[in-house]
Image (cartoon, rainbow, N blue to C red; front, side, top):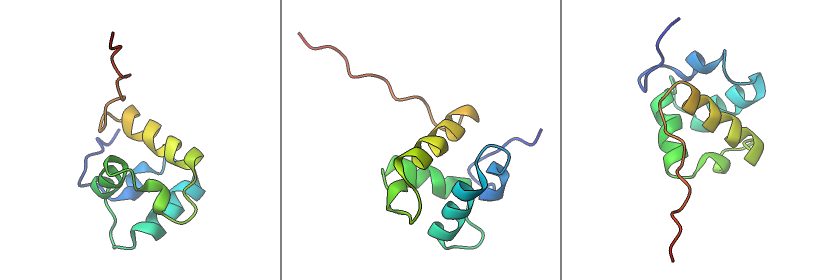
Length: 82
């Protein structure tokens, strides 16, 4: 299987994302070719849901996809303070 990196076109995520989610990302980024790195930047800046047709559910789908391929880490729960 192809190793997906930040430099890959977002079409590399087609096997991991639903068609509507991938289409919304491609339209929302608006640059050709949009890259996986741009998706990661939007995630890190908490701007995924600023894209038209990206709901919290689709944002979660994108997050799970990026975690699955190892390009982002799972968020750690806040430490207990006491």
